[in-house]
Structure formats: C-alpha cells, structure tokens
Amino acid sequence: KNEVEQSPQNLTAQEGEFITINCSYSVGISALHWLQQHPGGGIVSLFMLSSGKKKHGRLIATINIQEKHSSLHITASHPRDSAVYICAVLGGSNYKLTFGKGTLLTVNP
Amino acid sequence: GAVVSQHPSRVICKSGTSVKIECRSLDFQATTMFWYRQFPKQSLMLMATSNEGSKATYEQGVEKDKFLINHASLTLSTLTVTSAHPEDSSFYICSALRRGVSYNEQFFGPGTRLTVL
Image (cartoon, rainbow over the protein chains, first blue to last red):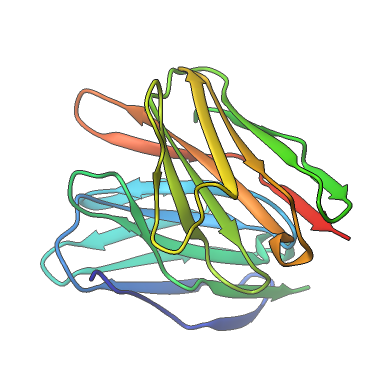
C-alpha cells in the first residue's frame, strides 16, 4: 500500500512569509500532484510532477524521486493562499491517485 | 489547464429520493473518470472508476446499487445516489483523465455538495 504523508498538518503564517509544505511517499510512483482546496470549495490542480521542479507564479514544486519526497513552496504568501494543500501520488497503471491528508494553511494579514 | 464541470454544485433533497450528479470534461475526451467523496476535514476517498462504454469499477465497501455510475459518452459521466439517506450527505468530486503522448493527467471538477434531509 502506498502511504502518503504530509507535513505539517496545520500551518499558520504571516502575510509575506515563505511557506514550505512537505510530502513523502513510500513506493515508486509515476507522478505526483499538488492540489489546492479552499474551504467549501472544489479541487484545483496546481502541479503535476514526475521529476525536477516546476514554477507557476509564486508557487514552486519540487520532487526528489530517489528520496521519495516532494515540497510545495509559496513565496510572498498572501491571505488568499489560505487553503488546504493536498499531495496525491499516481502509481502503477491504473491511474488511481493516493491522497495525503492535506495541510491546512492559514495566512494572516 | 483542462476544464471539468459538475452539475449541480449544491443539492438538498429529502430522504428516499434519488439524486443525479453530472461530470463533464469540457475541452477533451475522457474515457476514464473518477468519482470521489469527501467528508468534512477528511481527504478524498475514491468511490469508483467510470469507464466509457463499460461498467464502472467500484472500490471496496462502495455499494454499486446505491451509487449508480453511467459513462455514456466521452465527455459525460453521471453518478446517481439512489434512495438517499442523511448519511449520504457529503461533498462529491469527479475527475477526468486526459491521456497524453508522454503522460496522463487528472483534472478535477468543482464538486457537488449533497445534503439529505
């Protein structure tokens, strides 16, 4: 069974701070997703990674396949970044995702 | 990114009624779609994999007669919650799989919040 562990579970930051959310998984994967969910809202896919690093605006995602670890960084955080961030991994050929429990980020003004 | 829609976004119904939720991939064809449910403060739980033109594959513990899935076209999958009860109240999310030359990617719908009274 592929376990996905995220840390921290909860994170509170002041506006402008640099944020890092971590994700570790236990078996080989073909890709990793970072997802965002605002309270009461739907899921938005931020990144899909299979190697290296991706950047979109203030968001940066990295993955180390050998260490089975990925990080999501938010630079110059803003209150609108407050949401649950979910790591999900794709393994095997059945296209099923295994989800982490999410990290609740609160950015205070 | 690709767009997946769900309809309705919210539904409130009486116990015993059936509710149909639609999931559409708006700008690509999806032979495979997924249905998830999410309880408050919990992560997504996969309910079933919807395959165009064939029967859905249900996860262990999910009643196929309770949650009817139909994937009749390459852009539409429907989930019908039959004889809904209050314990079926949840946030239902679909995703559509876009197959690419070098990789496949899932795109998520905005979700449907079901409240059964």
